[in-house]
Amino acid sequence: MNYEDFYRQSIEQPEQFWAEQARLIHWDTPPQQILDQSNPPFRRWFVGGTTNLCYNAVDRHLSERADQLALVAISGETDVVREFSYRQLHREVNVFAAVLQSLDVGKGDRVVIYLPNIAEAVFAMLACARIGAIHSVVFGGFAAHNLALRIDDAQPKLLIAADAGMRGGQVIAYKPLVDAALSEASAPPPHVLMIDRGLDSQMKYQAGRDLDYAQLRQTHEDASVAVTWLESNEPSYLLYTSGTTGKPKGVQRDVGGYAVAMALSIRRVFDIAPGQVMFSTSDVGWAVGHSYNVYGPLIGGATSLLYEGLPTRPDPGIWWQLCERYGVHTMFSSPTAIRVLKKQDESWLRKYDLSKLKWLFLAGEPLDEPTAQWITDVLGVPVIDNYWQTETGWPAITLMPGLDLKTVKFGSPGLPAPGYRMKVIDESNGMEVAAGVKGVLVFQPPLPPGCLSTVWRNDERFLHSYFSHFKELLYSSLDWAIRDEDGYTFILGRTDDVINVAGHRLGTREIEESVASHPAVAEAAVVGIRDELKGQVPIVFATLRRKAGDDTTAVAQAMQQRVVDQLGGVARPARVYVVNALPKTRSGKLLRRSLQALAEHRDPGDLSTLDDPDALDDIRRALERDPDRGG
Ligand code: AMP
Image (cartoon, rainbow, N blue to C red; front, side, top):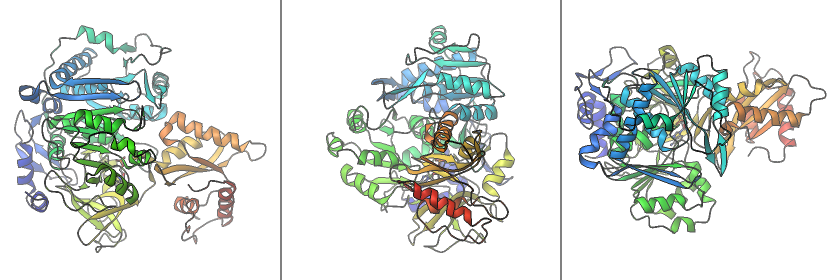
């Protein structure tokens, strides 16, 4: 079937379409109703059907592909490669599930997973799914405060952590961050299950609370844990993401809809058939990692490659060497990673036999044309940009080479994925704009299977964050977009204060709160500015409490360090400007966009509402004093 017919059917006959797609997975009880939209914008897919993500990802393949590789976990940091067949993965997941049960974790309990990109992260996720526990993976690059915020919201029964991660040859000890997060959290779990990789010889256990996984594993080596069948709409996992407030939102995913979206997309978007190899370079802590390192490829009976480390370690050929060694069919990465590789000698890319590689997918941030052109030329395979959000869980705008490959247009992720009723509308009146006119990208309910069901324990926030922007009930992506005459969509950046650093979504409010918690800081404004490598980086404008006698350089450095300590290295402000006043409207609203424009040498826009015109001159002077301003 071609893309047009496939998409049209998903929109015009959604129940028929999704009933058909539902056959891609195993149901213990088949769904009684395909779609319930009696309470929009909430919707329930495959009502009454019972299934299990772990069963679909692992057990289901044992009869046909028990000895096929399921997971290959490679660390460019520790130089370790671990391979697991489906049979071995099944064993590891059963053992892990038994350990969870021994710690009294059961259906509906939350488990926070704070691990680097190692095989145990996959075992832990699948083990939770097996017993109906709700996992919430927190990216290992986040620091103590970020972890504490997520623990308090999810209220887990267990935290799973490692002694350390590694990046660029540096050991990053996790345990001190875990200890700090647990003392900050108001609802710390009773136990921490530690995966000791032997990287941190200083690691200390807190007696009674901290448990060693390797030890518990021995007791459960032969365990067999029955699958807990869940109704399609019960929660499977939470994944926190940044918004406009300082508090991250717990994106809640269901079971059946997500499984079907994974089965469909791995085949039709990513063109992966059972037995083929998918290499996603994401971290399990991100949405891509959940969907295309773990659930998608495994539900699809494929082999998934998981990679810890930088694309340049041990050398810039490592990813291509892996593609050759494992015969990777589809690779999935980010524009930032490709920009990093673009700085290396091209011969690294040409050294390996990439004849099995069919597609390179890139997502998470805008893909600039020079990068797209460069990688297309050197790889000689189509490069497919795809647009999605943590909330959607799978691509919303993409080409679908698993059906038929449409023309690739650089700068555009392409066409809407099945089930996405996409529109580009005028911000002021909610009317659809003409081709070539900028508007807000929205999706009309019902959101397709796989997208978030709600915000964890906060339906109100779900409604307010996504559905309150227009008179009509529409999901706002909070991204600007333009559609061309052929229906291709071009993404033009966020409408809110969220920034995108190397594909990582960060809320400027979170960074502002962290900076402003420094005792010397009176007020802070954080904006994202263009960066050649990372797409965007955060910069800070801050006013200080005590003006005389402060060493502003030292305070600026302390602010940067505070952000690293509280939120993690990904959020580190590239620069801090200490100023006398921040530009605000008469009603006290910070003019972040004017600040951003000035820092990027653009016109700051309409300043008629500015309260204190001198504030901008002060900002200009601060930027001028900085020799490498704006980039
Ligand atoms: P996250 O939830 O972290 O995946 O971030 C989602 C945001 O990243 C979107 O709202 C967009 O602003 C941006 N984004 C994701 N994919 C793309 C893409 N292919 N092109 C442009 N922006 C993208």
